[in-house]
Length: 279
Image 1: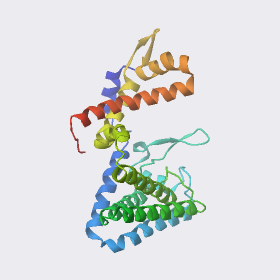
Image 2: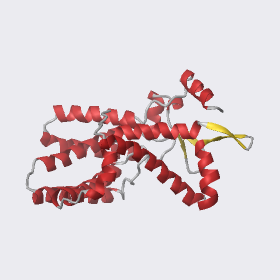
Image 3: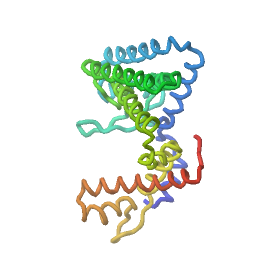
Image 4: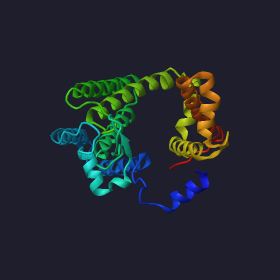
């Protein structure tokens, strides 16, 4: 189907539009995280984080909701509030397609704890001026989270799609340890030249994310006639140029790297011109 017809169809039919998504989740957790920080005393925030993660664990455990399925409490809540037609369609192990949203309403709850853990890590950094003490606190914080997450994995498996409590702890633990390492390399050792590539992404991260999403949709939908059949730009580049030369797996990797590089070029241009786009 030509792109114009697809755009017209998408612009006039809303009965199957997905309501939630990555950016919607970011907006929700930013709002509720900010609200909590403004209203809850700092000394109570660790207890609130623990309560959220424990409550979520008990809720999913009591309802046998450790896997993505139509019987999962996460999917049940989303279907009741959003409707199945407005949810992400998930392909499960048996090949069937179910309505299960990895950025759903109920699974946003542990994401709030995710944000609060990030705030607490920032607090450890900003409240200490001594670099050695700052790194020590951050390393201890990250190690405790990482150990707790892997320990919890025995009872509540690490699962991104349901945003399990163990997933929250493990990812925050790794992030804290990596952040401590980067502070040591960049701020203390002053080794900065190697990270310019990543700075181009970090200056306008949400904007680049949106650009990547739009570019992905365009490449996957803009089509033209090749050998008598309609083919999208994405399929043409992969099946005609890359796969015959590099094979399926390496060709797919090269396509992904090229896609990242294109987005990096956009981000780097903004970085060099000191254009900061806030979303």
